[in-house]
Image (cartoon, rainbow, N blue to C red; front, top):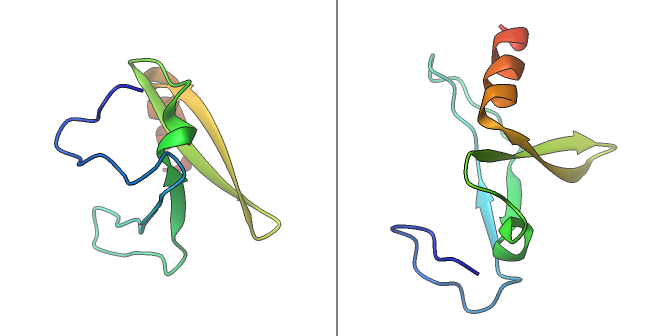
Length: 76
């Protein structure tokens, strides 16, 4: 698996990382999302990992940068 620049290697591919989102107006959500390096194995350069919250669970999907940009514009 390729290394992420500036991120130390995890103890194993299943080590979980937790993130909280912050918006440009400094608002935030108390709901965090998690990912594991194993989730990133199939990602291609120019793609973005999205975590959807479905039935209080997380579902990951990968989209292109252009699709991610379009999704952001649709929300605003």
